[in-house]
Length: 250
Image (cartoon, rainbow, N blue to C red; front, top):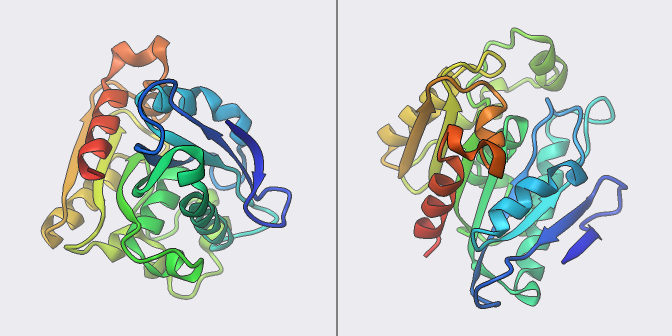
């Protein structure tokens, strides 16, 4: 529907939009999807298959690129993602989506981005997004609680930050947080399942709405791959995510 739309002036600040083939335009729920890649790799063009799978479930799907390490470190990719969400809220209606039904989703580093934008209101506020715009988010295989920094990826990305707790999604669990769907594979050795468990626990204890799924036998990539037609038999991730987000966004 839209390819290479600019949400900022940097070459990486572009996004693609995928629309459903069915349903009533103007009523589609809107989903901004952030891909992973350790905050140092990834291209939106490589995730068209995931966007099409989500769009086929009735969502207007926006997939942004964002700046990466080593050009930038935290928090530049969050600032980019927030600008992409602002673009989404401003253009969704013209593209057939309902901006009042906005949710975020992501895998791995992208799940971190989705969680931080959903839970720490300062990022979207700084980008000019109205409070409460995001109704729900879904995180697949996300890093949400990774202190102390003990690996090369998190150290290079976050090691310069003085207030490290402020980089953790678990620090922003609150009762009025957007509803969260959190899924991981039990066999994930890249981002340990304890990240999902800790964030789910923090949100539940705060009084927020959260659905937690830990899939036996799945590794780090599998919850994302399960969106594809060839891997859907491995776990019902696509149906669980989209059903959850539709309910939570009205």
